[in-house]
Length: 333
Image (cartoon, rainbow, N blue to C red; front, side):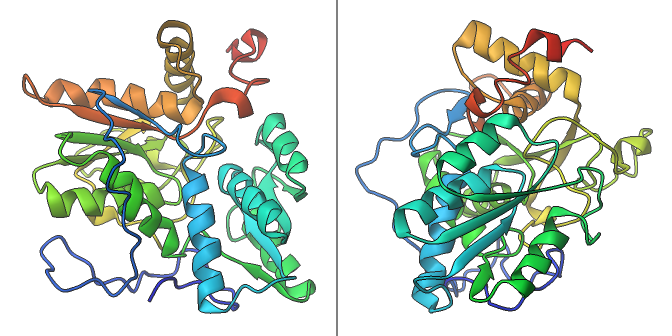
């Protein structure tokens, strides 16, 4: 079984049918793609920048995997239309793949997403539909609801559905995790669909059982479970936040909460400030979600012992956010 994508739409938060556990030694029921043997591992002590993909975007990896798995399964055929609800990065990845393979591509995304994302999507030939940022995920006006409606109206169309498509975490299980094996005592990953978090964490837990998996969820998102010992339950209430690409108001099917050792709730102010510092002092052109991940790592790395290493994934660059966090007037709070 290579993918659970189908031509029939289903809610993006339906319970996962996956039976994986870190103790399960049975052969995986999924098809896997071998990681290139000769590729060098990342040697940095703290950061993994996603720079080896065409658009410098962690979602490039899942886009090609979802498309190729759907083609192999026979549910995506020449002449079909790809429709995808997204915060932007998966849409950009799919638009790139669609441009190369000749598919028509419609990307549905909330209004808060950056002007640069729209410009890149248009350059790649994608059709764009915007939705109200404040719409809840199950509203007909949300990016998910509008994508569903479009699929019902457009013949010969398909939603690959990153929220429940197994090719999403499998891309990171097979590739991203392999880049950092044997280098890590703690890894910090932002949670959006949960694909990178679940895929990377599962492989690391299999190979390095003692590794600490830290999930990052912005205040305003409800992905992180409410800590029963926390005195700040208000941080787990759905509300608006500006950081793009992480957090949701529902639990995506591909997200495995059980694999996370602990969570950090990030906030817009610290996330953008750290991202700006990474640009100014480290020369790393990264976005707000990268800032959130590094800010969280700075909190959790204090728990490490001398000689242990913390890896932080920086999921994309700042070129698709330049009118926002790179603009000093926008950054004034």
